[in-house]
Length: 309
Length: 235
Image (cartoon, rainbow over all chains, first blue to last red):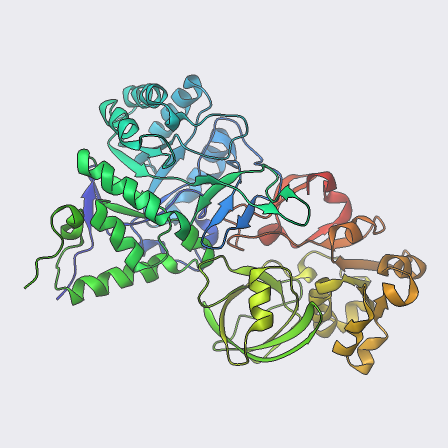
């Protein structure tokens, strides 16, 4: 029996639900020797800002034993550099490319959406409203009104599907998710790194130069998983579930909680082959359970689980 | 990732040699390149280790105990299975002036890639200086290697002091070790940088280093840089 791993969301057919999360996979090129991109559903590219950014000074990453805290700081070539240097190379990656952008004010969001709208290699746009690593800036996704403003602005400027990347560590993610959906978002990414830090006890100083960063990896999985579950309970909008997917069981938990697509971040850093390993695990599980289509298990935790026969 | 079985270890204080037998070959590693090594049951990142020596699937690492992963390696029983991938990074020979011979200056675990360099490229090696603070390190090295050791505790001199007496225009310098040591080197030195890495292949942007040509990555653009290229205040 073959298993159908494909899934259609945002009007786009994904060959399977595995998405490389924005950040750890960069623009994907360096991973090509290790990962067969034709075997994964999509890659969300590194977030692009209007101006090129060199990112934060090192150290920018520290292990948190159960997770990884990073404060890269959106290092990227800026929208111009992206269009000139990266976009012409994107056809080398034989998978769906999701463009990720972050503005610092509404005008910047506008410009970024307009530019992304023109890039034919990029059929979907993710608005990164939740990067935890920008010094002195509040995250857009901490505020209902700001979220709405950005999504509305973007909606008016493009017909491409818009996915909004939310912060998991906000007072009420459902309120913000609803605001994004009402403003015209086609989908949500839940979530992003949760703010965290480590202190070196010998020096008495924070390990990261920026002091705090975004904690990702297994440590945050129960937290983001609950956000995915709760949001999908009240909103009928496709969700990319992200946060600590390290193996096929983690991935399935997100699908069962209601995520249509499954984002892999930290695991790609540990082992660049992990997305395909995770996919094989999902496939084997579905075969064992005699489930023909991956999409049938999405949200099953809301529907009483598997029926006992 | 490739299974790497711990076959032998020799430890003195916080330093040790660890020999792993790999299940598969890693592809033609050259000096300066590194492997990413992961412990079996830890849900944490793999970490970069320079290659001290490699032949027929036998990987030798010279490691300083600094954190959880290295602590785990030190305390692991023989037969423990770790995982490696690589080699990552660029060989030194792709960055240096090949018409020169080099004094190889190491500090602590920074001696690793330099040892591999002298093994693979004896024609490019002028001499080696291996700097350590404490004398107990001597027992880890054989008779031939003793003459390369510069032990601060014994002579009061650092490896850079000894280098300054040796150096001349004709010979180059390749150095690997702690940042304060690298900063004290003469101008023309090549420095092999260590950095906290996430992926080791250039995607995650963790191991950033600021240079006169902008931000570069130790894993993808390095690990070897010219000393003058580096904006040291940024590190």
